[in-house]
Image (cartoon, helix red, strand yellow):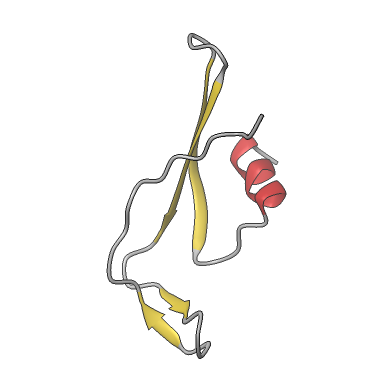
Length: 68
């Protein structure tokens, strides 16, 4: 099992999501863990309201910060 598989398992990622890259930046303080999560183009996702499988209409990059 490689690092990407371990992180994906820990995050509970399921298809169509996949973890494609990970990088620990130790040059900054505090250290930063960068994860790249993607899905194949054309993947279908469940609607949060009705649960029907729908195509995504946009993607965006998000940043989360650990709460103190």
